[in-house]
Image 1 (cartoon, one colour):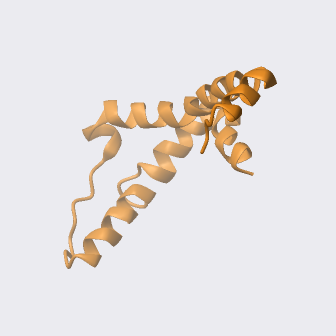
Image 2: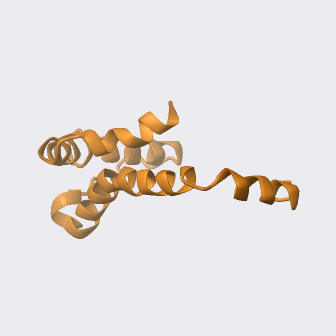
Length: 101
């Protein structure tokens, strides 16, 4: 289940991912990030928190976050392939030497 959830962003088409980030997450009126910011501010007693327009005020951060979200599963697959290709005799030798205790 965890592997499936970690690989899922890699399967999203880049255009769909860009639209998802722009409209669902970054929108200053109804976006998830501003909704979370409003919720946290309300917990601390602030009735009018700032509602930044993430794309126009912080474009580099917005693009970096969406690209990291999209390409992290690729790095995870490379790491997983490397870990699964270890020979079993090395794993057994490490267990005998006390690794993992």
